Image 1 (cartoon, helix red, strand yellow):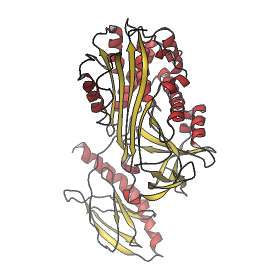
Image 2 (image 1 turned 45 degrees about the vertical axis):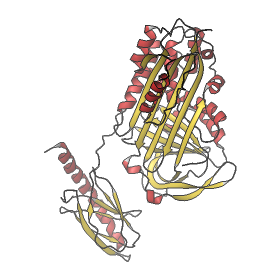
Image 3 (image 1 turned 120 degrees about the vertical axis):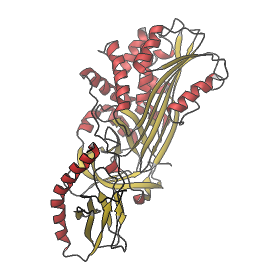
Image 4 (image 1 turned 90 degrees about the vertical axis):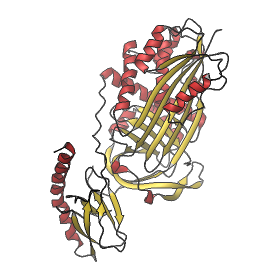
Amino acid sequence: MDKRKTFKILAVKLLLVMALSVSGLLQAQDTEKFWKVSGVVTDKSSDPILGVSITIKGKDKGIVSDVYGKYSINVSSQNDVLVFTYIGYEKQEITVGKQDTIDVVMDEGEIIAPAKPINLTQKQSEKTEADNSFSFKMFNEVSKIEGINTFFSPFSLNMVMGMLYIGSSGNTRDEIVKFLGLSGFSESEINEYYQKISQALLEVDPVTDMVIANSIWYKNSVTLRESFIENCKKYFDANVQALDFSNSNAANIINSWCADKTRNKFNQIAPSPLPDNMMMYMINALYFKSKWNSGNKFNKSNTKLDDFNKANGEKIKVNMMEQTKVLPYYSDERLQCVELPYGNNAFSMIVILPSENENLNKLIEHLGDVKWGNIVNSMKNETVWLKLPRFKIDCNFSLEQPLMNSGIEQIFSGGFENISDSHFWVSAIKQKTFVEVNEEGTEASAITEVITIGYGGLAKPKEPVRFFADRPFLFLIREKSTGVILFIGRVDEPRE
């Protein structure tokens, strides 16, 4: 007997135990007007499925299919929705209407193993805490400049800063260490962290399509230090390549790499022709696409036009998704948080809604001042009535001013003797981002580009809490076991 059959048998045993309590719920129907809906539940091979749970959506009424796959359940309204669930199969929802016979064919779903936590050392965990402080600090600065509908990847910026750290020296290195909160870390501890976290994130969830890629493209007339090239390859898995920047095809090579790593979201990063005084492009590409956890997908039939209240008081109509589920939840006098898991629960989106008397800008500053971990660790499972708009955000911004506002200045004048004997400095740091959130899940990507110039100087049922994202809100995407934040965004005006 193969493992899958064994799994199904075990699942049946569990569901039969559950049926003892579920079937007793039917006694409550005696006082209602009802009729019977019957049918057979089978798989695609027409084999009956024993132990399928059939419940009436929104009501504490249910039954399980018998050894022949047969079921019979009492319903009281044509609007009743029958929900068919069975471990290892896709859930199905069918409106009763005028039917008294409903036969169901269950599609096998992918059995997803629960996520295994990423195990970090104490020092590496301290690095993730420093990274999260950096994330909120930088998002605050970026948001001040970019304004509404800002989407930013602190992780992508962090990766290029890590590669810059390898090549930095003197005061520039000291400044990067302070900026990233790395005081007390050895060079090997820093490099090994970047290596471990990027590899682990790619492996933690088979359902999530994720790319973390780094590249360095440099003018073929420049000589780079072997130690810099080797360390970027070893710790960042970077593609390091010399190009003839005067060749008209050089920009196409760089742009093709970017398009490939971001599933064609970004294919115009380097200008053509490349500027004469440009010596190097250092690029991180981050791509993330995942489905909501199978139990937390939004039903498209529940999405409808609803009011969204902009900060200026204007009301606009948006497509508002809706569901009521048991989800991790937190609230205090300033905010509400709800967490929506992806795939095998390794990654999640946390939506943060300010209290009605708090605006978004003040909330962003507040999150930068508090220990984010305290909020996350205080989340408890609650039944949440959730409304969340569908939205897309595209951003293309420069990070020089936000970095300078945060204390980074030396990199723009030099201090990269560990890259080359040539005098290098950073002329620009740019980031392009994209995110789309809908009923199925989330697609997000980011490209962060450093340009260098050289030469010349489950809870008990109860009344659900309301989480209506019908006014400006924040959201972030993170890996749960480490807390690493991949993206942070603000939605001031949902657009599709």
